[in-house]
Image 1 (spheres, rainbow, N blue to C red):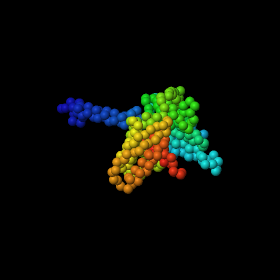
Image 2: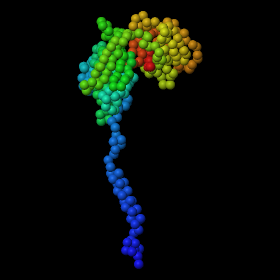
Image 3: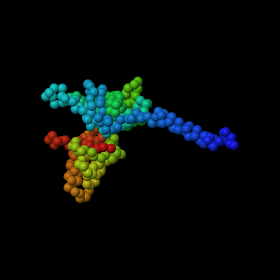
Image 4: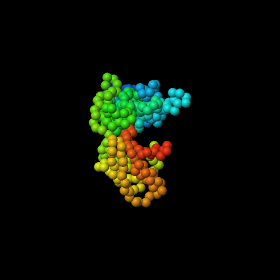
Length: 316
């Protein structure tokens, strides 16, 4: 006769233990599936993208908030027949991303220029964050009237800019003083932290940079075109002109005013489109009388013909 604990109808002890273990594991699985998402799984705040900055809503510059389209806002004129109208432009070439306030994510920063009519064109440094998926102004700080941005870069917690601005006694139209300014987050807003004079406008600022043409007479280059270049240093201008290579002397009689001497050009044969662009480029190079900086880019200016400007805009 079998013991009551080991009868044929009783489950073996090993089976009981296995059953209890399986049940425990199933319970754990249910608890894990019901557990909330970990911190790593929660979506983190994001920095604005370049495209979002070009469609940002900007406050603190014009009289009321405005929304950019492809980096530009143009408002209605103050009077129905007025030629001037308020404008605001965010320069794509100046966009940087940096953590200004010490709290992730990074902010987007860029230079803005505004005009409400008249001769003044005011530059600002803007900082932007995301709100409900759209870029909005976190803060703006003034750079000045008709200043020229030579370059913009960032270090941890701050943005630095080199600008050409009017020195003592200089008119706003014709600045020659090079100043370095630092901006950062202070007392809950974007502020200028420092400003110091570091030099003056000179073609020496152009040295050690291979400038690449991006616009001619205010128009982008034809699709597929090989962009001309310019290297300006040691009293010479040289580069690729669209088909051939060129070189020639350059002098600066006064800050911002230059003259190019006779250009030597190689004689390689190219297709008609390249030859046409090269001819136009060399015509403007030979006629250049002045230069200035536009949002960190180099603009060479020749006297216009009639109402048509003759300009060459280069990026770094």
